[in-house]
Amino acid sequence: MYSGEARTAAELDSGRAMLLSGLRANGIRDQQVLHAIAQVPRQEFVRPEDRRWAYSDEALPIAGGQTISQPYVVAAMTQLLQLRREDRVLEVGTGSGYQAAVLATLVREVYSIEIDASLADAALERLRRLGYGNVQVRAGDGFYGWEEAAPFDAVIVTAAAPRIPERLVAQMKPDGRLVMPLGEGLQQTLIRARKHGYRLQVERFDDVLFVPMRGAIRTPEG
Ligand code: SAH
Image (tube, rainbow, N blue to C red; front, top):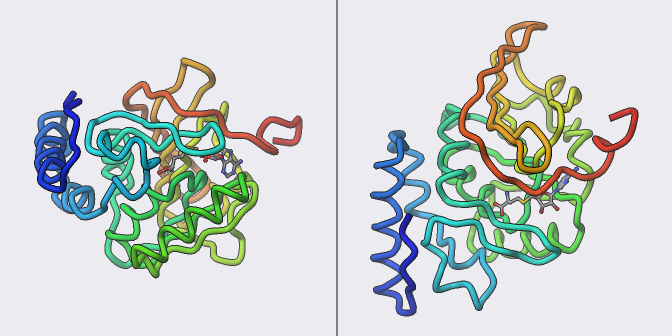
């Protein structure tokens, strides 16, 4: 893991180059994904005091006790989504907006839902300021998905849930892909679920560590 400190623009640039070579060495082969990670200025998505760590491969704290995901995990999840230019993608857990920006670099439209209204506002403002016009953000419980914009080619959940939220599957196109951390506490695995008619094919990948999904998933109906 690269954990160098970068204070100047040149140091941020070389930090970014080292991050990318680390991602390649760790199995991120999708050139489009690597290109998107290279394009999105992660230093704009972290707290000002953490800017110098923006290109170290680690999760960092953001407001509301939440985190911006580790670049490797963002890259791995994005690669698993197998995106095409024309796709429309739903994200649950906007957080800083970083993952949404990476997605927006790759696809036509991104819809992102954040349960913490102040994080949703801040992310939308940041994404607009940075020129990501193809991302819509709304405050709400992503458990219910985004019915008016469905169906989606791909769905990404960036908070850990004990099971795959059924409504999100319902809002996927046939052959759509859903990528999320499945599990609780320290036992979480990245999964990809592919929709084949009424059947879901689920594959398991790396163990990961995400903040828990909140809201209706925690209730008996969830
Ligand atoms: N994708 C983010 C990191 C996400 S951290 C980024 O790139 O920065 C997980 C986020 O999911 C947190 O911001 C948390 O508030 C949000 N979250 C948790 N439960 C949620 C739910 N039910 N619906 C929408 N967002 C949720």
